[in-house]
Image (cartoon, rainbow, N blue to C red; front, top):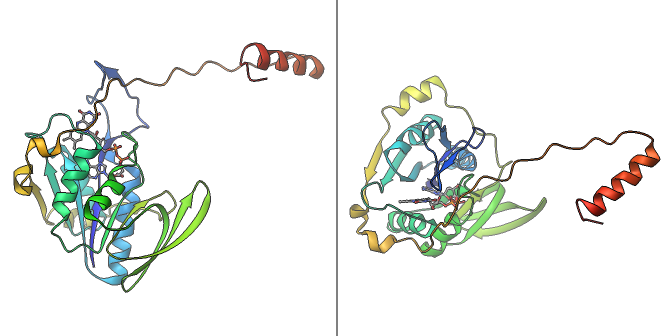
Amino acid sequence: MNIYVLMKRTFDTEEKITISSGKINEDGAEFIINPYDEYAIEEAIQVRDAHGGEVTVVSVGTEEAEKQLRTALAMGADKAVLINTEDDVEEGDQFTTSKILAEFLKDKEVDLIIGGNVAIDGGSGQVGPRVAELLAIPYITTITKLDIEGTTATVVRDVEGDSEVIETSLPLLVTAQQGLNEPRYPSLPGIMKAKKKPLDEIELDDLDLDEDDVEAKTKTIEISLPPKKEAGKVLEGELEDQVKELVGLLHNEAKVV
Ligand SMILES: Cc1cc2nc3c(=O)[nH]c(=O)nc-3n(C[C@H](O)[C@H](O)[C@H](O)COP(=O)(O)OP(=O)(O)OC[C@H]3O[C@@H](n4cnc5c(N)ncnc54)[C@H](O)[C@@H]3O)c2cc1C
């Protein structure tokens, strides 16, 4: 089975994020595999181990994404591909990324593509479905279970806390939701082996694309941090007085009653 994983390098939102001139400061930020893509990598490895085949992890970005691709190889993926856009694209959006990924995948013999449900930075959840649309294959988002029998896939997807069971056929693109599996940590032998696994680097030219073909359809006007949380208020005194004060605050300050 030919399995492809779409992997984004993102900054770690657990770390402090600062913004200057409308951009997130990359200096001092920690970069990681998008957490939902870790579920995607783990699932791909488990499907390969159960059904045979190969896992290729693909990322669109700069050569800095090599580190996260090596981590994916150390987890157990077989191959990695970096589509390096550094010299060709300055500003990109979800259209840019999806178009590049779809061009890369279109002449491959793909059985299964697994992406993350959402990137924790850009957070649009668009790339997976867009790639599937461009490849004209079925897709199912936010999956929490995947079973494959021959060319039939039975998928459980999370629908705001409820579950939906869907049966479809391969080739298929799915996006991983939390709970799909427990991603493994790369083992020491895995890290050693990863150094020898293939990590290919290609550019837009290799995909017969030029800058105009992938020009962003959207423009980010502004990025800002959420407003600082104000300190909470603790009410004191007799219970009856507290209730009166609370109702007053809800009415006059929060304006919700
Ligand atoms: C060349 C280039 C230039 C860019 N320039 C800018 C810029 O100037 N300003 C700016 O704010 N953003 C820029 N971006 C980032 C871009 O706007 C989005 O962050 C990116 O397209 C993904 O969208 P998202 O974060 O909403 O991901 P989502 O759609 O939420 O991601 C869902 C899933 O899609 C897959 N995926 C997403 N991105 C990638 C990727 N790069 N490679 C492989 N798989 C992926 C992963 O599986 C991920 O879990 C650029 C991107 C590219 C490729």
